[in-house]
Image 1 (cartoon, rainbow, N blue to C red):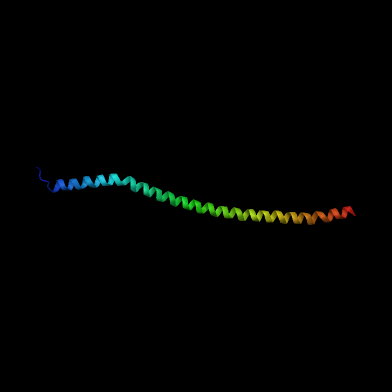
Image 2: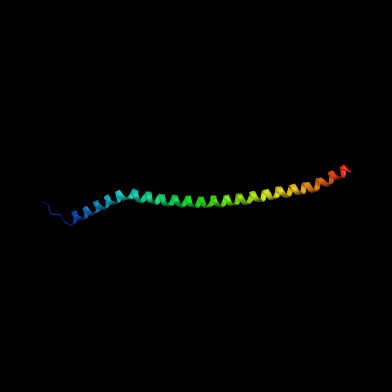
Length: 86
């Protein structure tokens, strides 16, 4: 039987540490990558929601402007048509 001395023990500790890092590094990398990707997705989704709300607001403003334009057109052109009929 061989006797383990301090250098062999230290070597075994480093080998075990290297094996542990080799096994857990992909897991750590994937979790970190998933975390940052989900942060980006949440940020983009919040931006998407705000753009949807802005689109709804602008659509309402456009409909209001179209309605006002129709009313002004009817007020401007109807008196002219009434004068032609007389």
